[in-house]
Amino acid sequence: MSQLTVTIEDEAAAPRFTFPRGLVIPVILVAAWELAFRVGGFQSDSLAAPGGVAVALVRGLASGEILQATGQTLSAAMLGLAIAGVIGLVMGVFRGLFWRLDYVLDVTTEALRPIPSSALIPVMILIFGFGYRLESACVAFSCTWTIFILTRTAVMGVEPRLMEVAKVLQLGLIDRTFKIILPAALPRIFVAFRLAAGLALVVAVTCEVTANPLGMGFEMMSASQSLRPQLTLAYLVWIGLIGWSLNAILVYAQHRFFGPAASIGAAK
Image (cartoon, rainbow, N blue to C red):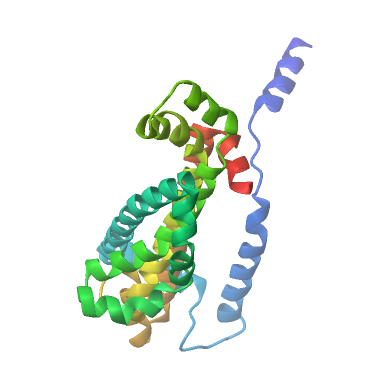
């Protein structure tokens, strides 16, 4: 009897593998895609079977070609994100604290913010030429607005009671900002950086596809123009995996360090 009890407890304690429901539709689509090539005899000069895409991805990673392009894209994207972080954070804090400044700069901000970064590429080429500076400038312009708007909202949404405490303690502007406002707004500011990080990757790849001769976007276009659909789609899959991984890491960090506070703040 005791042996039976131990066996049942062991089975209950053993972890069970459950297939993620979110992968059901992608797996079905990939399987149908593969069958269309292997069984249905589907032929295309612009598409490739998933198996061929996987082989091209593995070969590109093994040769270092994809990793080198990845490093170029991420370097430019992270540099642009860092610049946007400084500018957007400073703008958001100051305009969140001083409503008169926010009122004066509102028209200028709303005139610049809707401009797509791709429309600025010709101007950026004239200023910076080709290379990392061009790409980082485009990323910085796009990401600044996301960080600025969410930071301003976070600062303006600080609990009034905390501001009353700052007045009671007679804290100056600097002390009030670093001891009261930023700690209270930090969860939502982190959300701003998480959203901007995903945007940075998108803008960097777009810049490479359209103009800048480096990185994953440029290599993907080169593969497309040389009629290598396997490698083209391999880069596309790899970019998607990088974006997903980056977001997953930042979401984990958000919940790890801030708990539900950041999610609640993002919803406000």
